[in-house]
Image 1 (cartoon, rainbow, N blue to C red):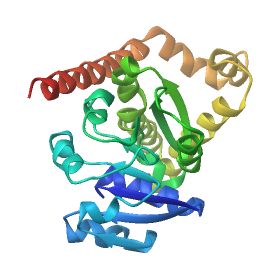
Image 2: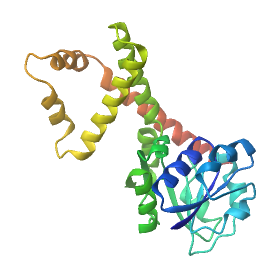
Image 3: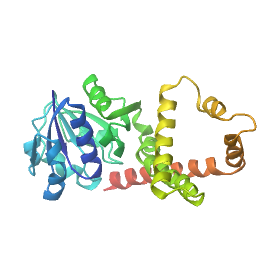
Length: 258
């Protein structure tokens, strides 16, 4: 069992806690100043605390707080080189954290699907260990990227779930307009995205090849795809990702200027 502590039990911290708990491979300490946040994760941890220093004895310490309080949290953490510190805060560089701790530092950008073990995470190549890889495996899938790629990774997998939710809603709305009950339309749209994503991850075929496999000549799918191919839908999605990437870079610049 890996002794793991999570400092910050907001949306992302609590999602990681639940995903790691589900794996059964961790003893977890949750730390937050908000009693309600601790109450929300109490069933998924071995212990809760409001004292940051009380969460510093773990093999892996995960800091999942807002960027503007990362420095304050690090001041209260006394970690050794044998420990690993995972940071999630957008825009907070590895260099910034390494200058304030003796622990091995690894920067990650997970997403909320960690809660169900379906997380997509980006992790910096520097400092990553097999222990970190195993932890990320417990919560989903991950890709190792260079530090300078974290802004685009933040946009793709960090912000990406919101873009996918938007598309699921659009498909569900189309189903409702066609006569489906709202709950049925949402189930069909969401499960379709889930199944399609699993197919992409498990198949040796490219996305284009998978599209071709669904598009029978003169069938229903090809008619819908013709509409998408003739539209600017792909360009708009790229613009959404680009906007999120630029904002991530702005946050990093603002943080470094402080």
